[in-house]
Amino acid sequence: MPTNLPPEALKKWEEYSEAQSPEEKLRKLQEFYSLMPKHKGTEKLEKFVKRRMSELRDEIERQKAAKSKRGGFAVEKRGAAQMVLIGFTNSGRSTVLSKLTNANPLISPYPFTTVEKPEEGMMEFKGAQIQVVEAPPIVPDGGKLTNLAISLSYNSDILGIVLDGRINPVDQFNEIASILEKYNISLKKPRGVVRVIRSKAAPGIIVKNKGRILDGSEYDVRKILENYGVRQAWVEIEGEVSLSDVEESVLSEKKYKPFILFVTHADDELAKKNVEALRKLGVLVIPVDLSSEVDREFLGEYILKELNLIRVYTKSKAEKGFSERALVVRRGTTAREVARIIHKDLYENFRYAKVWSKRLPYSPMRVGPDFELEDGDAIEIIG
Image (cartoon, rainbow, N blue to C red; front, side, top):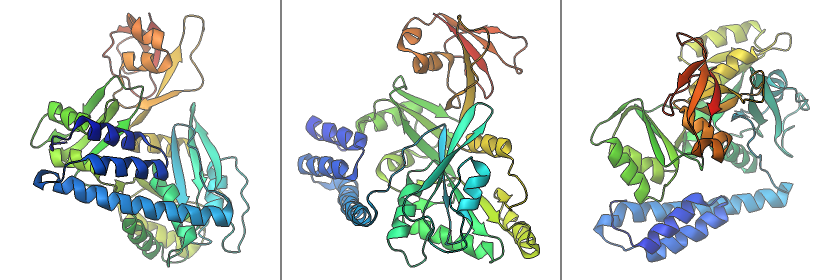
């Protein structure tokens, strides 16, 4: 934070960043605002704080209205990642959920079936799980249902946009993208992306630079984040970014969301033509109909790749084989970082690791703490 804020203000900013509920975030941000100096050097920050406090007040009011109507509406994240299914009324969200998971949502030709609470299920593939959540329908004119769908979308890892293949899905997609944009959710991947993933498992601020920092270094990135109260995080950089982009990743509430298009009624002749029109947009399109299955393994691996996640299988001295359930971690995670995730003692007493992988000249290979793992690797930590 290039504004020389006093320690008391920085502490409140850190507390705001770590707060979970909108009420707590608003309270901490108000305390921060009362402590921050107001001058030319803090103009940008002051504008952000005022705008964010206004947004939090609106969010609190929306949640109060929703709770009074339906008694609460939240989904705790489970599994390796969360995909939220969104779409207009009767687009086929429940059908997609049932195809991807073992959930049995009520599938009805009548509108507004999913309004009381979100339906959810787990998509399993090769030792990993993706949580799939069906949001209420998006209503073009807005309203409570749209607000609830947007809230789930904003907190998701990836979106599954469900389109009725019989009703010009290109127009449906463009309209949904426009609605999401109004709520600070962008489907357009920028030229460069900075992701700050806060985690207590991170041994400090770890920069995974797969792109180019135009006007600074990784040291500058760490200093900016430290000044904003970030202490433990993985920072992923893709494409070309500036230090302003790093700052915006902390300040801005706008989020880019990767997405997949699911086109229902795909066995309809008109829908088949519309699927081809959507594919010309250069995005992943999954046709869905009642008579065929969705390739969960392909879809799961695509989602992990989009989110920069990999599966690592673990082994201990007491076990003969490898774990069936994979440990899902960020791409670029090292052997010692895996040890930290498994157990504090393994991390502190790390000597070396054995790694089994098809990409290695032989397996197991003895590796050091900084060895970066890839998807499908198996590891045994020796402490």
